[in-house]
Image 1 (cartoon, rainbow, N blue to C red):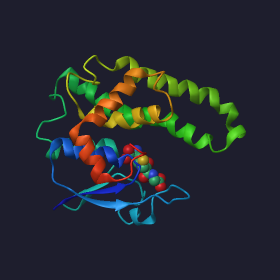
Image 2 (image 1 turned 30 degrees about the vertical axis):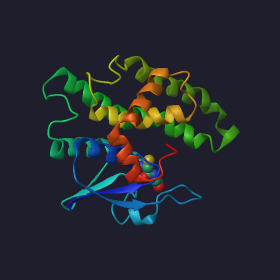
Image 3 (image 1 turned 135 degrees about the vertical axis):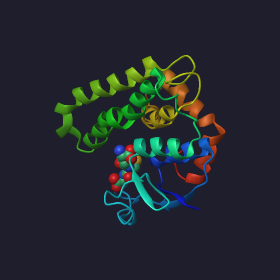
Image 4 (image 1 turned 90 degrees about the vertical axis):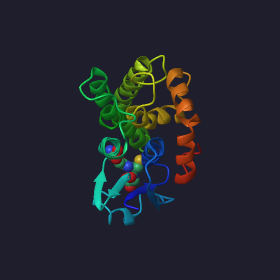
Length: 208
Ligand SMILES: N[C@@H](CCC(=O)N[C@@H](CS)C(=O)NCC(=O)O)C(=O)O
């Protein structure tokens, strides 16, 4: 089989497994476990790509990194037109915006909070700005979720899959009461048969 996902437990690569299950592509998984103390990826991932991060995929020997790029690549190469609005439409442009918002914008305050939480009082001066940015990004998602339960159109898109990761973090951090539509969105993602297949194949995923 030529398509391989280098998959780290409890990580963003879970949504790549989900995407592959949704489009019905055949793939193999190479598993990597986070260090139980540092929570970092093992050095074996550096042998795959210098950044040593996950997800990384290999397709016919071509190594590809970055969730957003991997998602676009897999949809185009193996997606058969599923999960992406028709090119040239306004929905396609909106889809690109959301797909890249997930890593390019939403993850920034999430990661800042993750790191500053470890240094406690020393980070107090940054806290108001981080809290404001977290609320700004999650509120934007909450407000733009459509009555269909998706970010674009009436059905699941690749952008929904990308956005599921920051949405899951909001819910894991206890924000469901503040963002109830995001909480529903996460529940509906997890109810999908393809999501459950991916979870079963991927192993540990934050207790979900
Ligand atoms: N923007 C990258 C982020 C990749 C990333 O940071 N992955 C995390 C997993 S969620 C990772 O590999 N962390 C392990 C480490 O940094 O050692 C993407 O979306 O692919």
